[in-house]
Image (cartoon, rainbow, N blue to C red):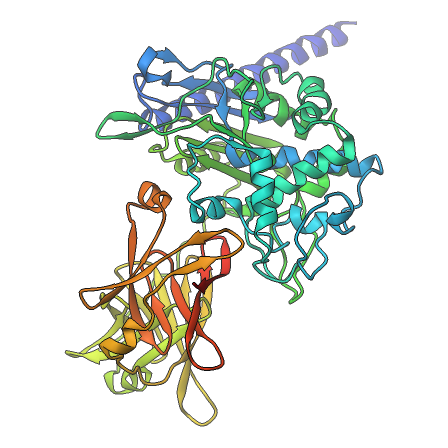
Length: 562
């Protein structure tokens, strides 16, 4: 009996010691996160709401700053934020619920579930839409092209009609991965048709209500009155300027408003699912598909599957003017970080990464960047690389040796010195980019690869650039229209230069209303904002239109001469 009493006493002491240790660790984590946030967030400026969850419960949960500057109202745990593209995970989860009930087949042609779509000439499936491999154009860029401001009242029907008007795919399905808001708008309509319920009602009945997400909603109709919602701001020189709008009522790709308390409930469902099941959560966290060329796809069901400093993370960011949001799940660590901000000047990515560093410090594997070791440039060898190379996205880069330096020259004649790692590999110090030249079997150098932002663009040497006469340049001026979108983009010749004139949305969001065209070769020009612009000709050699090969999330946008 005495031994049993001693064992019980020791167990109590051990439990108390463990609890005190856990509490001390939690307090240390909380203090360090507070310190991190204190460097960026001020109590009298727009701020945000942050929570950290683990399988044992909420580790951290706090709000900072004001939700509406004009009323000096403070953000609280029930303040609604526009979670922007973080909403895509709810759309994808709705699709998964309907698939689980046998109401959807992810590999069926989407025309089975939607009517009135253009003849795309290719089968597009629900899975393609989920993974951004459908080729369906992203409506954010389509709205800018068609002069539809993001402040304009915009319904889900407006969104779908715009998609139906634009009959061109960016690419053949499953040959590329290009993020498409339009694809997720279509998914929301599929949810409605398959369930027989409005999308907002489906999310409320099947996800929000069962999880206790008491204030979350889809801002689907003008009749909905947002309550306790944050206003989105930009802050410059300590002065907040309202930049958000609540006139957008399309859904699927975004437009869910949720509080920190709502998102905590959503996060808890990933750690211990009561809506859906663990098999669905497992599918979300694993890459499972490849493109036709064999490349794996890092996007699953409304989430990117990535690695952060050696740790697997499933995440999605969401941003609209005035708001920035993150939802990050570390599946092998049963850890979730949720963050919403109504101040677009805050370094949101830096904050969530900083929180990750604090909590996962003992698991982080820092891979030190391999230092670039500069060697003396062999200028005689570098001369064989001189010339202009066309990259796969239409951009052209020129290299030349001048004043004992090997230079990169951009189409607008801005130039940067290149530094050698060896005779074929060079890097820039002005920004993080590298290039590699390749010698063919006959000893000539006609190929190069440009490495920047984790991507590689292959380039081929182009022929000698031919200068155009004034008369030849003038032939490109004229009126051009996109027939599907019914938008005119005039091109004028003024003071010896060509300009393409853009709608008011370009002025509003980019600060420009006309863009200079810089000739590079043949019928191809380069712009600072629209990338390459290539004119086309009819069989008689007359200019009959132009094409923009790479325009944000749109490809090969074609305009016809009027």
